[in-house]
Length: 339
Image 1 (tube, helix red, strand yellow):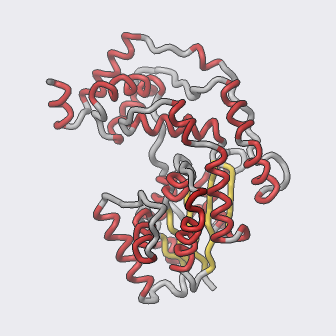
Image 2: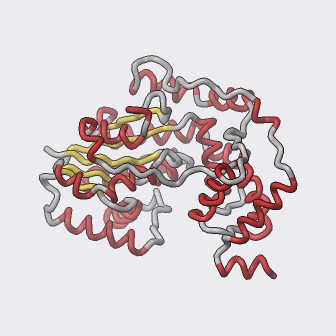
C-alpha cells in the first residue's frame, strides 16, 4: 500500500521551502513513484468540510483561484483512481497554524470527525501526518515577525494569549485520536536535530528519499526580515497598513546587510520571558519527548542570552529604511502614502 504524507506545519517552519520542493521537482518525485502536489493544499480542508457537512474547523477558504483550481484538479484525479498506486506529498501549514490556536474542546468531537474525514479521503493509502514544531519562544517571535511583514497590527502579548500550551496540546491529542499516534511524525524544528540541518532534507528523509537528496533542487523561501526593517514596518503599518509586497521587502532586507552593512539582531524576547513560556509548555514537550522522541528533551538548543536587549534603532537609519520601503511600494499604496 502506498503512503500519503501530509505535512501540516507548523506555520513559520519552512513550509514555503517544502512547497517549493514539491513544485520544483515534479519529474524527480515522479521517478520515485510519488506525486507531490505543487501548490499549498489549503483548499483540501474546505473541500473535506463541505463534502462531509462539518460545521467547525472553518477558516480554510483559499482566496487564490489558481491554487484552488490545482487542488480541485488533484482531487478529481484522485477520485478517478489516478494516484491509487502512487505515494503522495501534500503540504500546508494551515491545519496546525489555525486550529492549534483555537479553543476547540467544546467542539472536540466535530473536530475529530473533520480530521478523520481527511484521512478517509485517502482510504486506499497509508496516511502519515508530518509536523515540524518550533520551540514556543522562537515560534512566538517568528509569528510576530511574520505578522509585521504581512502588515498586520500585532503585539507580542496579543500573540502570546493565542498560542497557549493548553490549546496546542489539546489539538495535538485530537490529531492522535483521528490519525493514530503511530501515524504522526513529529520533529523538532532545530537545525541540530534536523537531517543534515535542513528541514527540506528532513522531509525527504522522512519519505525515505534521503539517499537521493542531490537529485532534488532545493529552494528556500519566505525568509525573515532584518530587525531594523521590521521595527520601521511596525510604525508604517500603524500609519498606512501594508505598503510594500513581501518580495520587495526581502530585497530591502538583503540590502541592509550586503549594501549598508547593518548588523541584524535576531531575537526579541528576554530570557525570563522565554523561561516562563517553556514552563507553560513543559507538560506538552515532556509528552512529545516521551512518545515521539528518545526520552531526551524534545528541544535541545540553548536559550539565547539577553545581549539583544540593548538593541535600539537609530532615527537616521529608520528614516533611510522608510524611504527604501516607500521607493518599493506598489502604485496603489504609494498614492495612499502620498496623500
